[in-house]
Image 1 (cartoon, rainbow, N blue to C red):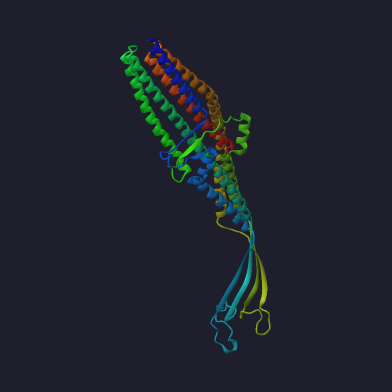
Image 2: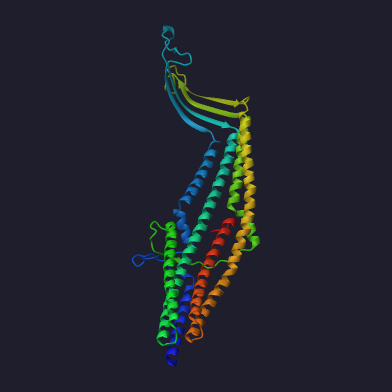
Length: 451
């Protein structure tokens, strides 16, 4: 009996050593994620930066924001082009019925026409100057800045989403490793209770309890496996054309937080939502200016050079040169439009007041969200060390409890509880890491420091 007990103690010690070695590998930070056909295709190693770049190239909402930003930049060029004169090469030919009088055979019947035959081939330059054109340029600049800020909001939202899916996928794989190890441990313990029952050192109730724990661990392992597969597919949708592509994820190192003063300064200078609302306010200001521009006159300039003659030729039949130029200046002064301009100005001022209200609300929300995000990130970071200590404690507790059970000093319920505590501690550590990464990503979206 003493020899059998020594053998069982030795086997238990070997098992615990194997579990500790697996836990060391598990905590090293490398998680292997492979699809069902990983044995056929070579798995692609993906870092968090790689995942972000791949997602930016395939996510439709981000692509739409990028297209809008590029379109707004082109609008700036169009608005500035409106300040420059336009040049066209005008060509036209007229034929008007003659009057029929012999003395004036070349006289047109329509008095508005210059002749029976008239040819125009001219270069025409037009320029219109007014406050509205300059307001349009400023509005295009502000709209482009707003589109850029909206693109940054979309990018940081995408980065935060990818970071969350990336962390959850790694955590799901680590939980799968924990579930597999717990299942193997439960099976081994079930075998141990059966051996002790055969040696008349344990009751049959211990065997039943151990078998129930084994069955539960098996079901837990199956559920965790399904959850890990779902997490992989959710991430793969953003990364690959074929979501079934095998890949591995490289777990990033735990990054520290900046000081609160640095966070506040970055949020005040780089928050994209605040930049977007400020740009919207500038757009509203220029809309008001453009509406008020209707009160002021517009200056029009025209320069024409070319031919406007009865012959399509540089010189006429009598030797007169047909080439010539003309210039005109037009000043249109608005007098009365039945208060249309006044009403348009009022409309734009109402919209501008609404944007100002949105700006103050955004500033208040930024303060609250910044406090909440920093508090969440700080708490999650501080709990990481405690969670690591809980894992080490649970591992040692399981080892000691099994040794006590083998020596007849602990019950089967003590071992099952120690196994549950070990699994819970491992899973809690993964959940804590995911919580910290999500909180840090949320904080970075507010401060504008996300790369």
